[in-house]
Image (cartoon, rainbow, N blue to C red; front, side):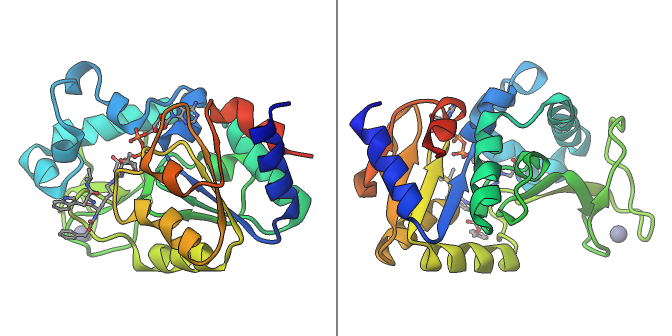
Length: 241
Ligand code: BV8
Ligand code: ZN
């Protein structure tokens, strides 16, 4: 076993309060394209940062809704992969492990993680564009935005779009976890989207060790105690006792 993996195993074994921070890469081996790869087919010519915005939705509700509907269908056919399961196994072995995710696919919960902070909401829920009611589930086969039954405004996916504030309770929980943990596993994120990408730096400032798991280099590598260059579905199971 290589020394970096041995060091990471030792850090996890010694940790009293590990937190896992994940991005789209943790779901890649479930067959879910990472965020920037998600724009294929009909949406290939669109920039996610314009499509994943309220203005983009208001300009073309059916196009944006269909993009989310197709992603949601794909997620419905996907299964948690060994990375999600290894994270749930860490919790099963030690009790509480907070998972702070940027993903909207719900796969951590489906793998068995019970303390999941969804910083960017969930594609599995929808809410009224006019904000008149709570989020709810939506039927998968709708091909254009359903209407709110209270005010007739279109429903929108219950995700955080670019230019929108993150849910304050999720931000508070994520910041508390980053401040409290003695180890943060940073898995499958390009760390380009803020304020989420701030969290590993916050954990480091609070004295936590940081382990990065990613096939590609990221800005978080500079503050990492260990960088494991590879895929989460292979590396995370190898960290378990
Ligand atoms: C905000 C939900 C305050 C939707 C997402 C100008 C105007 C306004 C805001 C900004 C601006 N300029 C910058 C900003 C801030 C902006 C931002 O950060 N932009 C970036 C692009 C620079 N942030 C925001 O707008 C946030 N809100 O700032 O509010 C505000 C309020 C009002 C006015 C102004 C400001 C909101 C950000 C949330 C956006 N919503 N998702 C949806 O999903 O459709 S973000 C979306 O992209 C994903 O959720 C995800 O978080 C992100 C992509 O990041 P990753 O998860 O890291 O995925 P990525 O594909 O990038 O990387 C995958 C990684 O996995 C890679 O490193 C790869 O190597 C690795 N990998 C691949 N395979 C594997 C693997 N790793 C391990 N194993 C493998 N097998
Ligand atoms: Zn409404």
